[in-house]
Length: 549
Ligand SMILES: Cc1cc2nc3c(=O)[nH]c(=O)nc-3n(C[C@H](O)[C@H](O)[C@H](O)COP(=O)(O)OP(=O)(O)OC[C@H]3O[C@@H](n4cnc5c(N)ncnc54)[C@H](O)[C@@H]3O)c2cc1C
Image (cartoon, rainbow, N blue to C red; front, side, top):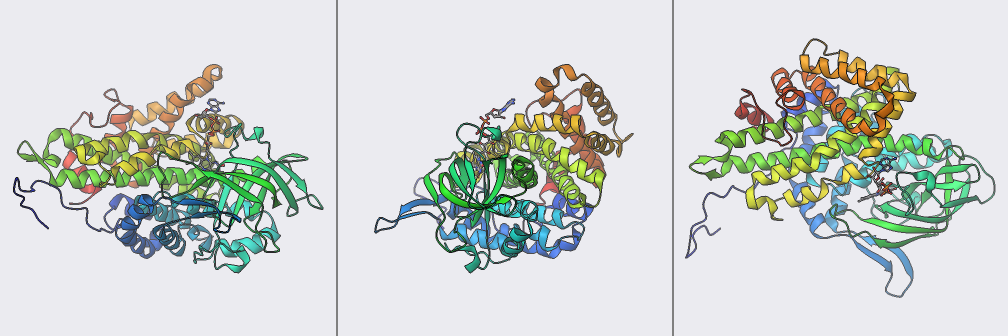
């Protein structure tokens, strides 16, 4: 390494961000996992934390620098409709599958905290690469829907729960493991899936598990090399959910025609395609006409993963910012020692920990949902609240972290531009912000148990914080005024999310941090930018706690 050039010497540049164990260096994650019942999975998390903060960071760079390539034809001109990925993508997928990002919850089904531990695995993975998180998420989330039909479950679940990733383009029955995707969005409507025009006609009989022929298209169809997809199409009784494999049971290639790959803002390691179904064969999952209800089993979990993904992106942006500020000096002092920079970094650390705490709380509720009706109701409403707010906070958060690096944060060699491009995605897909807010209103209006579970959660910290108590009281009153609720729903859901985050921080035992967070987000002195916190919080302590130097 040459530090001395003819014209200057290289000084005051932070050292490269060395390999670290993303689990061992994240005390908030360790405490959260333990608090929500996942401590028994610590060994798996330490192992994956070391991989994510080491080998996988390099793989993430390579997989994003070498975008997937669409191969519509082979060299002899035959139609093949395949996508070629860089080896780094496959290695990231293999590590994710082997270590449980796509299957840990199901492989440890019934064990308390399994879903919390799996959320932590996803949180670690997404810090190294975000694109592969998409097929890993969809594979994980497909399980509850597939379980509905015995014939489908017995064939597909062993492949999905396998810890072997098999990248070969072969019929799933000939592979060591399978991955799953989903297709809902069409050109004429994504949020309003009832507008779907793809048609499904029975090949012989109708009913769950029977085979149909699908004709139509999907406007967004990510990870199109997955082995099968849960898709929506119109059958005689209405919108229905189907399992559409890449190969038919006789081993012939199914009639999917990839039209092109999307040229996306970010998410570069992952391929998202446009696709047509030319009489593709697919099996009905659930009853005809119950497609939305069936696929919601999957969507509830992919929305949970949007929260995890955005929390992970924020964590990675935060540690990069802290690392830089510790090693860069300006005006005679390290950046991390400058009071205003401390305010920025501490504020980001609070936001990141609040996002993680709510994410793990939702993961815990999903874990408990099969055994506990209140937790099921909480999971239902808190997923939509958290998906809205955690994902909405991600882009401004990453921008602020990027600014901590100055010009270096705008340059590709730092990971920040990639995180910045990725940041808006979780808020858009799987139901954009407004759709989440409307979903919260729907859950609260139609399911009294959701409302009870939400306010019971606030009540667990009653008396701990005047601001939290006032916020919960105001929300209860505002929900009674139904006249203008829809237009006001963002304002409501934002405060629900912040109050839930504050509640979790108190319950995890971070009293000082919790009160600083609550004061800065709900108090009189709240501001719109990060780094404008009032009060006497020791920023250095917060930064050190977030990522020990
Ligand atoms: C990179 C990427 C990958 C994707 N992968 C997949 C995939 O694999 N499978 C898949 O099925 N889809 C996928 N999607 C699609 C994604 O889920 C949709 O884009 C998203 O759900 C929004 O649907 P839309 O684009 O049709 O927008 P629209 O439904 O037209 O919505 C546009 C805007 O209007 C708002 N809006 C809609 N209805 C209302 C209302 N009643 N009141 C107020 N506001 C409203 C929405 O919140 C949004 O902000 C992907 C998208 C991206 C960007």
